[in-house]
Image (cartoon, rainbow, N blue to C red; front, side, top):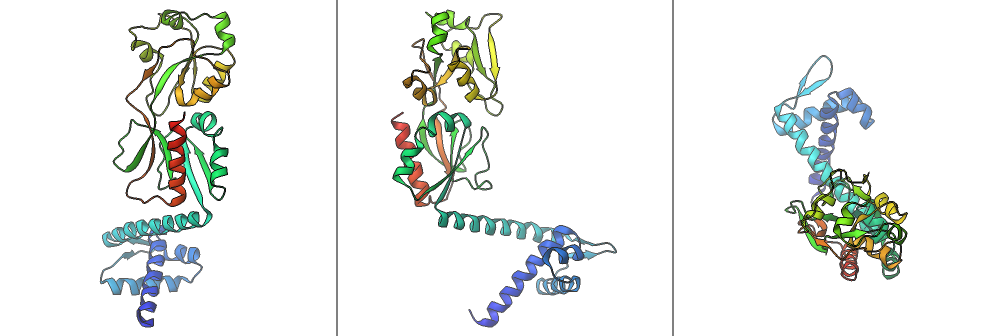
Length: 302
């Protein structure tokens, strides 16, 4: 590219940046303040841009300016372009830092991921993990999330996905609880103190639906203790306050440690497995691919 063409391209880009500020702020004066230039410089840049495009972008008013239809359209497109540039810059910075961001539920992070994460760090000491705990599905692009572990109930058209674990659910309680609350069968379970997770963001199988899989129901006045965080549900179960629903991939380590046990053999596997997801059409960086492969391998051994 010749120096003249490069200079013209730079001026055009600068004028677009000035336009974005003036259109967004509705004022040449406020745009000048934001950009640390003079108000006449903003006005001159907008005259050059309008002359170059051959269309009016602003209606000059006594107090400020208002975008024309053409100005509104250009502002929308320039805004989208600046967002893409900002996203690209953030991704390049994360490449340099070898940072990988994983979004996961609080319970999975606490009871499944943290006991295992040291093994990943030993294998990949140069990768910096950024863990976001959330019980909602975040906008992966906006939140700069490389991978997410989510329940398979959503439309995955905009995501790549890899099987993580099946959703298998069975009752769990502490050894202490079982000593004073024998559970010989499902009828005894239904009449026991039951710890309930009130899921706020996506439907999950509750006690009523779980028991219905075995043609059982809750009594007219069940003993229910409700919580809105699964980590608290498990802590209550460990302390002997009742029987919790145990998601296998989360409670298996607690069973292995003797903190919880399975009082009954019945189990339900739903048709909604958990998946590891990534934005569609985006080639995984090597660091992200390492984490994805590690998660799949660890889940296979759960």
